[in-house]
Length: 263
Image 1: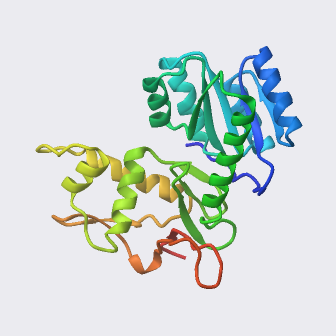
Image 2 (image 1 turned 60 degrees about the horizontal axis):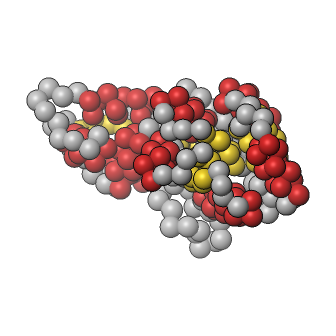
Image 3 (image 1 turned 45 degrees about the vertical axis):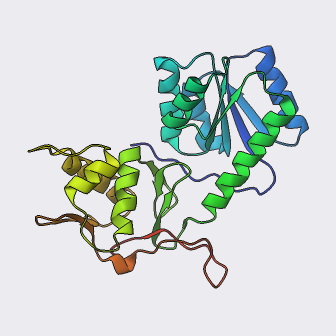
């Protein structure tokens, strides 16, 4: 399980980490971004990026890909799992199936290599702003709260650490929270999270909830956050300890998404 600290927020200046083989294009992007006032670092591989991220704390990762094959998708998986920044993918070949594949795999934005430098920098700024707004809605630090970060599909822990959730885990957790203390059937969780009905003796939802419990526990949630409701499915324990944000509370403070279930 991989954790990363939430990067420091800057309302104006993105911190860009370019993940690309050293090329004329990569050099041009680095020069243009620095000239525009962005803080930039560049690495040649995803492995190098994972090592650099904790120290550099980028707000945006720009991954340059030659294709959308299996190896390319694995690179997206690895960077998306870190959950420390927004992920923008730059494709050598701009086609709709490739863009969809990257977005479904975890990219926040996809651009072609032939994109104009001004548009690329504007997209980086836009992604940075969008993620900053999301980050302002999650509780971090010593608030005793847990939070969901939908932009990165992860859960934020009591000290700001992040644990990535799979799409199914994220949907299952949202569904349980939306039920507001009412049990949610295994069949319905299978339909919405796994996108299929369950067959007899199918334990896939139980395995999904088990993995979700472990990830929540790893970031400070109580072991009994998600309870089994006999013959009814699963339920969030003590829903009064949870709150769902509508943006900003009446006192002007960010409203947390999820509260820890035990002190």
